[in-house]
Image 1 (cartoon, helix red, strand yellow):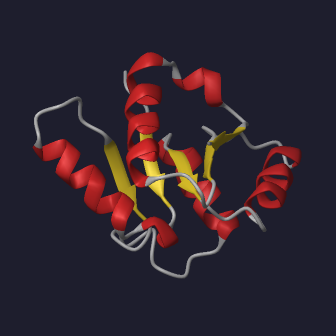
Image 2 (image 1 turned 180 degrees about the vertical axis):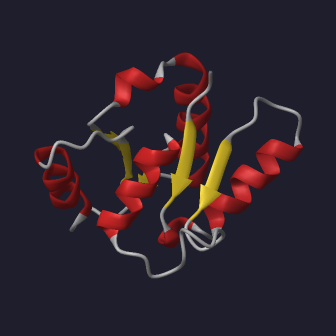
Length: 122
């Protein structure tokens, strides 16, 4: 089963458009939702709540929020929760490289490989 993703709200623009283009091109589909597109995942939702939602829905969180997400994930795990994982997109990484990474990770790895981890997309 391919990985499923949740895009943090600051990745709603170019990365989302790139995923939509990719999915319409006939290649392997990327299963992604965006913060702000679902009632239970509104714009402005806090990091802790995003982690809870992503865990419940078994979606890896894709974010570029280096300043706070690592601490939120550490507290989440310390509280006995488990995360499907976090992919941290660094600012210098191109949208094309992020898209390629998401496709490869989705189809060439198992969800258990990412549990409770932050993986930096470089």
